[in-house]
Image (cartoon, rainbow, N blue to C red; front, side, top):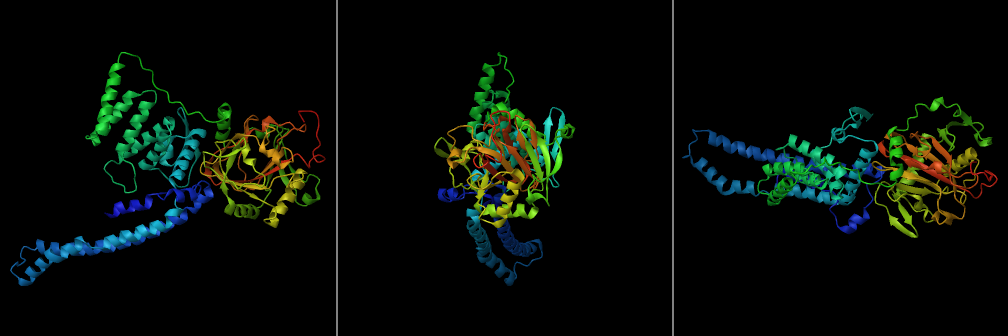
Length: 562
């Protein structure tokens, strides 16, 4: 086995048994876990470096032997009759060459590499993690209308007709290889999602064509694989037989003995002949149906603004101020308030926490991050998309408020975990005038979004009397206080769908809004979503405040509009 083939050992992820896979199922969904994946890869780099050094030394010695023997053959004056030369020739052929060919050094080098790999294998991503990352790219592709060719080059561009918009310009480009594009396309292909599979497979075919004949050890796929999958994907979508036939014929140029492809070509040719006299409409590939279809266009349009509000300053009723809420607690250090929207009432409080406080909250939560579950009736179900994790609250069923296509990593922190959390609660109470102590408010929920992490349109308050939320015996969620614990480079805005505006991620700021009218009715205009994070590591902390305990702090009225 050559050095190139040996490198492939390092690139096989998640090949352990099912028990091991289950134990590490959610390791690489949150971005904080992805960052930790750098540790085992650095270990693998160290293993590979030692292997390469061992192989280089071995190859230097083989080169020395080769040069020595070659010099004897190149010297035409070499006296074969010389008994010393005759002896060394016989020895080389009888012994030296056998030792070279059967040397254990290469086997020892590769065995050391394999042994080292097996030690870190349990810390590596599973195939489900690769699938999740591929789906995340497709999500970003959809929401931000990203061009696949641009993504393959490492740039984030939205292409609408002839207009090209740069959404984000990375300091360093990270282009994708043909095999990378193939893997994304294959994840979609295996789900029967040809809308996403075709552009990624097309890009894979294009890149494989450009590098055909170049062997890369780490690649799992080849041009033939990409052609094969793309041909069938075209056939499945609107019976685009002509494209499938063209790609299949190209496949046979590289693999002429493939009988299955030869049979496919005969089938495509017969179908084309049968339909030659019929007008065939050009196939239109439809985007797969997604949850919240009725709000999808508005939601994605708001996400594409990246939280920009270019005409916000023109509304005279919106203002900025220093807020104390008549609280002595804030008298010497008022909070900078920016009124974002009137109906629903939404305010942004800048620099609500310090850098050190935000960092400490993240550090306290990180060891407890777990994958979320959502409730369906009385049953708890695992969610399909693996974007985050949640630690269960003392009151079960809170997660039932999440759409089933949304998952993120989160942890619930009691104020007894650290005195700083008590201080934070006092600050929230002083600013809002509400009682934020359990059971009148939930513990602080800290969330870390993953690759392309998002939260589809939802309400924070319960919309059904049977909601598990009422098990807290403290009424509905009357208000939301959300703190941005990090900044992101692009994306991740909070979009209010029916109110038709979005708020960008502002590090250390807090977003506050009322979920209920004073009558106790839910405010439908608070339907909101977390846009996918395009680039960055998004952390937020949520404090959900309930109705009970606020009777004299926010008195009720009979008017549904208050």
